[in-house]
Length: 81
Image (cartoon, rainbow, N blue to C red; front, top):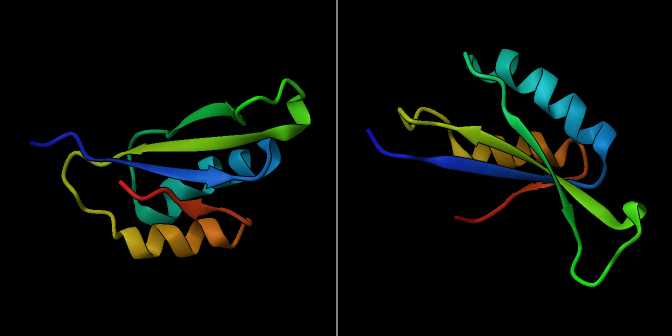
């Protein structure tokens, strides 16, 4: 089993919360993804933070293209590995 991890980058906390809540249903995942605040380099203002949704995919079942399209619905993208 490999440690495959997908990182979805979202523009704000609300979008990240929605993606985290819906991703398990849409992609049939058992585990909840992890939310991580990612402050942009040199920015101290919380308004200038992106949010990451980290999805563990040990069986490599998730399609990166589908994840990217899903994140795009919320103004985000799939980070390239």
